[in-house]
Length: 472
Image 1: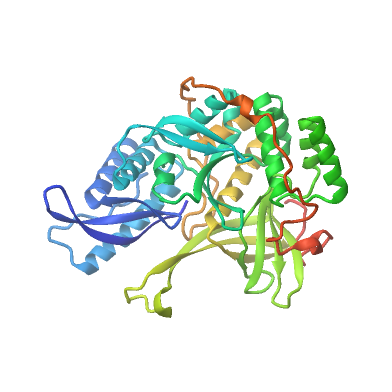
Image 2 (image 1 turned 30 degrees about the horizontal axis):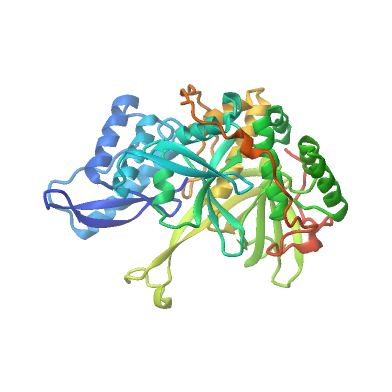
């Protein structure tokens, strides 16, 4: 997650006194507004709990009223402080830090704690209505969805909640995985747009874990619905023969066989991102990036109009980082001192072992850069747990509770330790497992979707020079 404080506001409290509010953005979107004294209180709490040696230095108090220049200097220091806390594997996953952000988010959006209904979408477009509190955190909402669907406790950690934006062309953009420091109801309603909703989707990468999920009826139906959806949107490549086989299995109601056949298809289990820009193999190349199978897959359109495909294995990435910058958009001006409206430009850059002795940075400019980074992090975590002989169920619970945060601004990758946390009790609610009984292959295509620049040119064995498929 990328934390920033790009701006301040002068606001008035209930007594009419003015104060400076610091706007904390997460992934370029306003999360909350806080006062200096609130952040100081958070700092004191963490110092008391973890000690001075663990908690980073905090911008000092001032005796006199701050000048505009001093306010901006404090803003920059507070931004660095928040980034340092979030990057720390202990502080960034602590309940002190996360509860502070949840409370601040709720207060900023002025949404009182009350009973509400929240719609959660399944991959096939069906909706599940759950009764929650507006103050329920991500894990609480996920538990409520699982309970409503009758998904067993031991399978809850295999799934996550994602914020998704529906596009005008009928496609969808995965904005981010909902984090432990946010309130899903507040996050989605504060966007004030019907284009955004929350989707339940599996959150692991190794297809070997599909067997665990398919052993349960509800898990099987969820995985089946997601697989059908991914095929329909062109995320999984299907030729005519495979299409006929899938249709036959579907007509027979053979869901497990359907999934097993899909597992053999290209890009099964991948998340595909919106078209963006990369500097590899040349600057200014248009690219469609997919994440899956422990790699980032590139479908690139070169400036010469030539099309190429290549893959970057996470095991050959030395480190990566996400950076953001403000890009003025009003009146075409680039003067940072002018009062123009700015867009946030996000970039994911990773250092890759192209050959035995050659490392090279590759940059992707995309508004989904942080989502890409989260995917990379979860792949690495999964590989680490599998290598150590750990449990996927425990790992998923750890990830759900916020131990994954590799990519704050301009910081190299470090692997944080995985922390255990207890399972909270789940409230028993009405079951909806029967709603997952049928999914159709509406408009199933035998090639990529029309929005994919790769077309059929990428079904061959194109590869970037120097990129190997072997792991270190």
